[in-house]
Image (cartoon, rainbow, N blue to C red; front, top):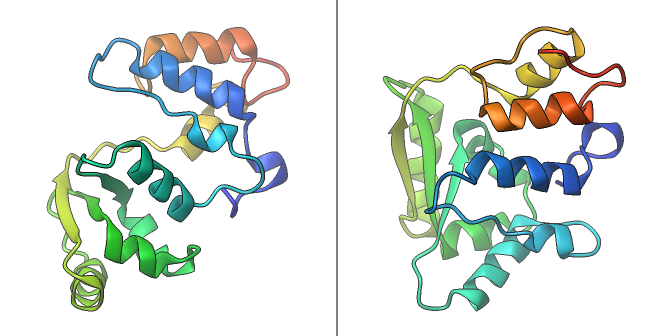
Length: 165
C-alpha cells in the first residue's frame, strides 16, 4: 500500500503465499496477484479499473473496515471509488458509531448511494496484534489458519529469530 513503506511492508511474494494457504481450502476464493504484478505504487482506484476490465459483466464490491472508510478521503481519486463501485463496510455487531453512519450518509448523498454497512461478528484479531505476538514469541494459535501459522514458523516471518508457536 502507498501509505506503508519500508520496513512496515512484508515481501509481496510472502504475503501472496500466505493468502494462498489461507484460502486454499475454500473453492469460492481466488487470489489475484494484479497488484503484485503492477510496477510502482498500487492504488485501489487503478485496481478497480483493471478488475472492471477483466470482469465487465460482473457486479464488483469493495469490502472495507470502518477505519478504511473513515480514512477513504485520503485515498487517490477516492471520489471515483465512491461513485463507481458498491462498497460494503464491515462493521462490528451492535456498532453505534455515529461518525460512521454520518459519513456513510454523506458519501451516499454525494456519490450515489454506493455504500452499505454490513454487520459483522466481533472478532478481535488484528494483523498488528499477530505480528506483535510473533515478535514477542507468544502463540498465535487459532488467530489464523494453521497452515499459515506453520508457514510463518517455518519461514521465520515477522521475526529474525523465528517463531516457535
